[in-house]
Length: 416
Image (cartoon, rainbow, N blue to C red; front, side):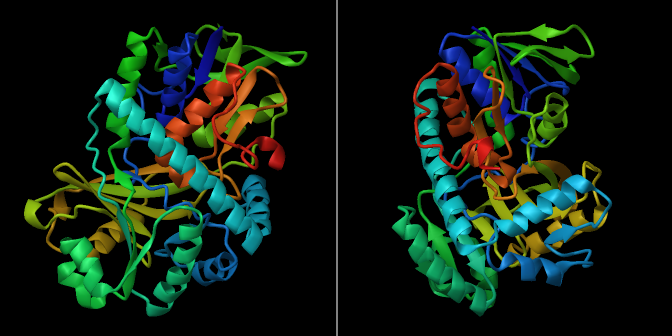
């Protein structure tokens, strides 16, 4: 059949790849000049199945209250007259229970494990290069109380089959010698040996090139303006050019998915969360990090991508405003310098900001919609890179009438 994929980021492109590999005629629509130029462009670079915990946790409401009004808070809510944000926020609070937190963690972990296996297959089959390294990830805690709480959480993750080593400060510097300069400031860390790193933008471009060889048609610089439904089926996507018809459609527009879906009566509780990153040239290769690092207290990740260091993090709820905030960018630089002083030429850092599509429970929306030929693949939040191949394979399996590959209970839109 002909399948039209709406969105050319890492989610849309991986979906297109699996659909094309299944033999479908595939067309991808995206407003940018090429693949992966929005949310996928400069993310944290970490493929971390271990980072499965939702933001919605029992401790989140109190922490958010403490951060309200603080311009440099890691999680910043800009209170505004936005019904979608308030609706999302209420749903978020309802998910801040221990039971829902544990369920969300298990679901994200399941997706992360499936993704890891699929990416290994792609590397073997396609021999693509994207600064891939598998040396694990280390969550660094400066606060002793936070580290103690994390140590208890590690036992839960181990029960779910995700190895977590509780590391004291000395062990942290053994795992990552780049931390030697700040070793006396570290309370401890959690090391996940199976996690990976890689450049999502490079990966997306490489997979898009493979897709083109498989016959996928990419229509860039194409603005999607609406969807037409007739009775119970989608029949056409309206663009600023010609209309695009198909037998099936996949909605993979990230933060912009709910804006399009609501025009045909599909309600998606997905809201944009602005994130920031810097990419700085490494000037001391010998002391640059080898594993994926997370500064838990600063809420940033630090990832070596070849001869560059990617530092990403913070979260800003400010609607669809994607303009960079210099103060937030400067905060990212200061946080990076505090953990890895002297490793990079931070004065030459390239700054980026992008919108990440978050659901209230931080689990993506996958699978069917109320229209039998409209499929959903959105709402991945900060885990899009970690879950992209799994999500694309699941949706392509469902379109083909096959088993999704893993149990997707609690991942479909009907949970809302």
